[in-house]
Each structure stands twice: as C-alpha cells, then as structure tokens.
Length: 384
Image (cartoon, rainbow, N blue to C red; front, side, top):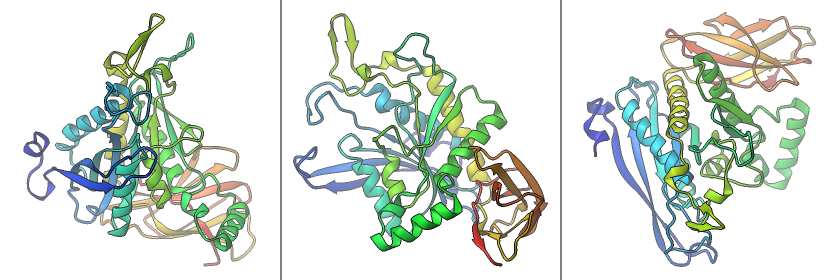
C-alpha cells in the first residue's frame, strides 16, 4: 500500500502483490493442504537494457515454537525472521526513491520453518518461466549481535554464507557428475562459483564504503548442515547467499516463550538490536545500489591455453549495456580468498597480464561510466 504510493511513477513505480502456492501434506511438518503466500515488492529498473536483470532479497514471515508442528503457542519470531522482513521494508522505502537501473525483488516468504516451501515453489516457477535472477540475498536472523559467551561481540560483522561447488553439479546424472568433478579438480575452481563471487562483491562494497558492519565470508552454503530460503535458489542454479548474525542464541530461537530458572526464553523483540539491524540494512542497500547500477558481468569468459606462456591472456564477450566504459582483469593467489589485484584493460574483449596462470586465479569484470563494477566472471580454459 504505502510503498506503491511513494517514490517513482509510471513503469518504474514499485508494485506490491501476493505470490500464492498450494502445498500438499508431506507427512512431516505439513499435515493438511495449505496455501503458502509470499509477499512481493517489485521495484522495476529504470534502464530498459537492464530491467530484466532481477536481484532478490529474501526474509521469511513465518515463525515457530519449540515443537515444529505446534500451531497454537505464541511464536513471535522477532529475530528469526522479523528482522529480515523489517530490513526489506526499509529497503523498499529507500529504493522506491533511488535511481536503480536493474530490478529489485523484495520477497517475504512463507513456510520457511516448515520446509522452505514459499522460496522453493517461487524459485521453481521463476526457473520455469525463464526469469533472469542474477543474485539472491537472503537475510535470515540478522538482528542480534550479542554473543552467548562472555566477551563475544558481533556488532561489527555479519556472516555471509556462499556455496563453493554449485548445487546442480551434484544433482546431475552420475556419469555427468564424474566429468564435472574431474574438471573441478583439474581447474581448481572449487571456490569460484557465481554465489562465491557475489559474496566477494559484498565484501568489496563494504570495504569501499567502510561500512560499520563488515561481512565475514563463510565458505559454506549455510551454517553447518543447515539451510535457508536461499537454498532452493542454489539448488536450481541461481547465485544466492545468506546473511546471518555471527552468534546465534538458541535460547531465543525456536523456543516457547517462557521463563525457566530465571532465564527468559523465546524470540522476543527485546533481543533485537535496532542499531545493528540498521547497519546490516545499510550494507544490503549499498550492495543493491552497486549491483543494479553496474553492467552485467561479462559472459563466455575464457583463459587462453593455445600455447605455454608465462603471462596470461583472457577473452570475453562484451556486456550488453550501452554505458559500459571498460573492463578489468582481476587476480588473486591460489591460496587467497579475495581478489587482491586488477588491471584496467579498457573497452576491449581481450587482455594480457604478466602473471602465470599456474600461480594465480583470474577473472574479468565490467565497469560503466559512473564507476559501478559488475561481479567477477570466472573464466574457463579455451584455445581461442
């Protein structure tokens, strides 16, 4: 309602709508047919060349008590995940007025606690309809920086989880998996998935703007053996990451509201730090401003292996946006997690750097006339 009445008008005006899906009983946490409804705020991009590029932000509306199938007890879910939903509402308010070239989709999902149903059904529908989802930022449990142990303080950082090996690689036919794993080992690309590049991008944005909350990159799809609403997007081949506070307090998560031995249990608003949540929101907003205004990442990026050399040549297809001003080749040592060097090669589709492909990882990113840079495109080996 309010978002639709503010900010940009015409084709660029934000739209708020429901995204319903029917879920059948699964014998576990869904005991009868139920309609799961996501709430979406779509903020169209202003540039026709970029409008079909979609950048999602997720948070979930539902919460739960101690018993997963308890539908009657109080389950306020203030941190898990009203914090993520509040973050999205603020993003909607800000981005409705901000000039962004690509499209932002803010989706408050339902059925997360019961099996990621809202996110999973939406992701499948998006894949089936051919939507160009470039990146998904899932904000789940992002409001409490306090640790449960003495001297723990997470107020200056937020975890960013990203998969290394793309999930579709392990859901292929067995014969295909074998070939993909061989290539993964041969190329050494187990830490260069599209999701991992988005995580690095967030770190670059935070470093550029010296944000109060800095991302702590975790090289895992999610917390150990766990998942979230970004997971089904990963499983279908979309780049997706998760923001999550550093120290989760399990006395305040998935707990009946009660006082036991003088201790307060339950996911209550009093355990959410609004200043920390505001800082995490700012990091999300800055990331979206950069992603939506930057050109697309170059495609068909390749490192040339026609002959043995001690330098490295890369080639790529140009990004389609008309305001592209040039490209940068980036690199990092094979033992380093972050890109730590770059060379501007101008507005071309080929560049050579005096570094050996034996000793360095390489990538290519585009930049526009305003200085916005795309995420890095990782190359495959090719003879031309």
